[in-house]
Length: 345
View 1 (cartoon, rainbow, N blue to C red):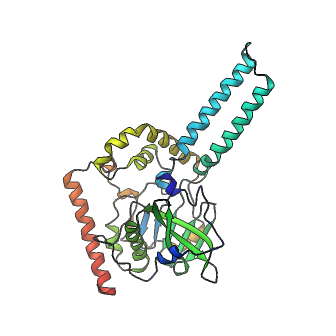
View 2 (spheres, rainbow, N blue to C red; view 1 turned 90 degrees about the vertical axis):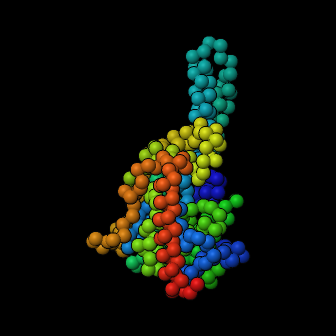
View 3 (cartoon, rainbow, N blue to C red; view 1 turned 90 degrees about the horizontal axis):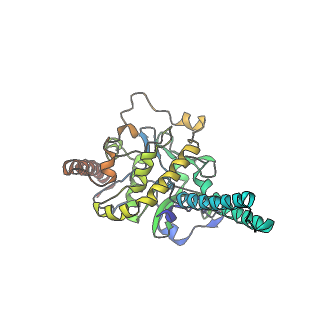
């Protein structure tokens, strides 16, 4: 799973290249309803940080697996440092040490090698940013992007070429900034969810409907959980919940077997969150996203259910599960009705 999230963070996107055939075939077009998404018209897939009538802020695709790569790297580096420390302690204080200066030099080279090998990916999670949000500005039809390399760019909604990017066995949505020939990719950003094409189609429709349709009230009811990272660092428990979240009780046994690894990853994730800076939007972005007083749409982490562990462990009561699905179905039916009225069935 982690490997499918690395493109763009650990593995840079490729620029100054032509659009591929698959990217052209899988394009998400602004101003055009995307049909064939089944019962659900839209899905937010737990990516929304804040939604109001002015802007929609969503997570980056790297957030769900923050710590997954850093965990093993942290353990490997700790082991090598421990072995090296023991060796040098023995070299300095033991009367039976026979390695000489050559042995110390070899250990130093090995330590530097593993330090570089493990340290580089660790620094992608640690001492960076807690997350890399993307803000869709409905009021001014702009998209504000917090890029992993530190730059913040703002682009007109209509000028971005949205498509899918294959991530090993799954897909994500990316936005391309094209040259004047409308073929050459100059820059790329990703956001939101990594998954199958059906879910991505519904996720795209969630983004598109927010920017273009008159159904914000119904869309707000489809949001059941917001990552609690707005203007704050994620806590340890939230990070652990994010890493082990289950979609079915069938996952209990494999997740239990993988729990030791998940705990290591959660520690690395927590270190990453505590050593990284909270992303801050510049004043010019904030000025374009001013929220009107008494905005009826205001969804954030404060609306999350207090019974998060039940959701994480796929152990909600039947009454809560049915009520949640009924809420989602009702909201999606109303969204579909509005879209049918505008575009036809």
